[in-house]
Image (cartoon, rainbow, N blue to C red; front, top):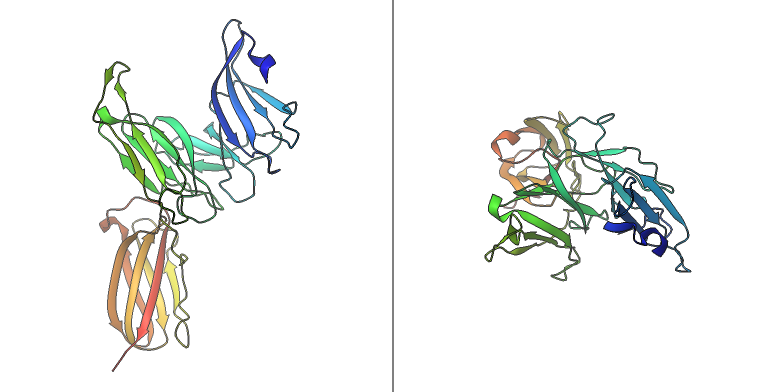
Length: 305
């Protein structure tokens, strides 16, 4: 890799991901000119068993590319791009190009950052143990937003971490499984200096525990009884509220629970129901939750004595 950087260039940002899916980690470098008049460029060095880096690909004027680990389950890393607004609306500041060799930079998924100015985009591993890698996008000055992988990749944030503007989130990164529960955890650190000059001695590094995705799916059948609970939601997708319709095979207590995509419970209701069809309206506007994907689970126990 040496010839690219002899007195002329500096490698500003580096990322590492298996972009072509061959099982070897690839290196992506953003190179900035130092002593010559030319454009910045990004160069991909494809990993291989011989540890030679002659297989490369160079793209000019692409300083907004970030290489991240596989987010859609196809075995290839992805490239996070700056939205060109040709496919996705302008408030999707970030888009994703699926891994390929050479990179085609086509915008195949969008991330709704709500038209917020972004700074860092960082892969953090699989923080909900669903088999897809996830990432953190830093919003300048006071926010860090979690976006989860999937197939398709969800467009909405799964969680948001807010900070005082003077304690803005400055970095995050893959910390791995700190608690040993098999789920990657989340690390976010606050700014160490204010305006690059005054040290902030009370700022901290936070580690948030990853949470397994619940075993339920968006519309889950419970087959523990002889018979099954059939559940349907309408409309789906929806804005504001949705109607949950379900059929139970016998009378008894019925529990309806809503989880966010991180597996956290955001709503639950337990009532006694008779055998047959039932309907419950859920108004998400009253739950104080953000837009995104939610999972609904209905379970029932047979009435006892």
